[in-house]
Amino acid sequence: MVTHLYIYPIKSLGAVSLRESILENEGLRGDRRFMLVDSKGMFITQRTRPALTRFVLSETAGGFTVKDAVTGLVKELSWEPALGSWIPVEIWEDQLLAREVLEGWSEWFSAALSEEVKLVRITPEQPRLMKVKYQTELATTTSFADSLPLLLVSSGSYAALQERLEEPIDQLRFRPNIIVSSLESFAEDTWAELKIGEVSLSGAKPCARCPLVNVDPLTGESDKKTLKALASFRTLNHKVYFGQQFVPMSVGKIQVGMEVQIIQSKDAIY
Image (cartoon, rainbow, N blue to C red; front, side, top):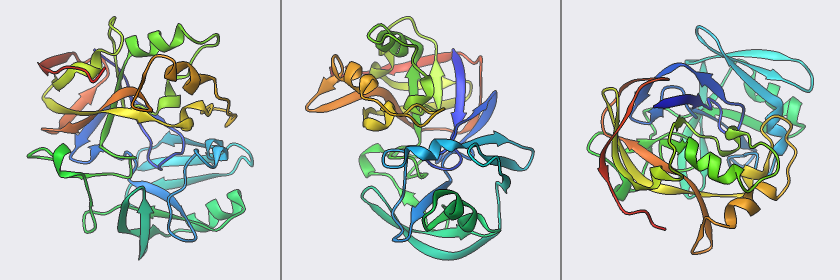
């Protein structure tokens, strides 16, 4: 059963918890359609700027508010804001054009972070293609997510990690889109195809984790405990894995409480 749904409208900023969402080709509606880039167009994240956790997002009727927890300033961003010029941006190995968001957003974030940054939006005119081996007949493009459109984690996987940590683990450290209930640890590793309501998903690949999971999503404080604990039993070929990435095979509504049907299984890489 689906227990949690999350989107991250601006990449690497705060999560928005939802009771229901619409799955689109590029992932849950509104997820990572915006991104901050530096003066050279390179994407920025909590990996190098843990202070990004200061920005708290809340859903509104027409979009969401962004609150700077340090200054208390609040600014509202619509789902379809006014857009300016095209800007060359880079995210991992991908280069594409994105449009700068107007209405003073770049200046607002630049003032808060004390560096020149721009807020950009991905658009259908300049899509970001997935690697061909992960594409489905329906979905060929993705958002500003690190790689593929959706990250799913089971409650059993969190429980297995929690057993190796002294303090409670915040699920948002791993920035999942969908959390499902499961008594079995890492059951999602074996899900090749699943169905949630009328939505079908293809299990593309396990998610390799980086030091971002060490950053507390509420405080921005970082330590090495989380990744170290995970690495102690989830390392393969020098990479640490947690959660499974999925690609849409059909689109539609997903709600908390919906049952998850496993249509096809596969061997886990472990």
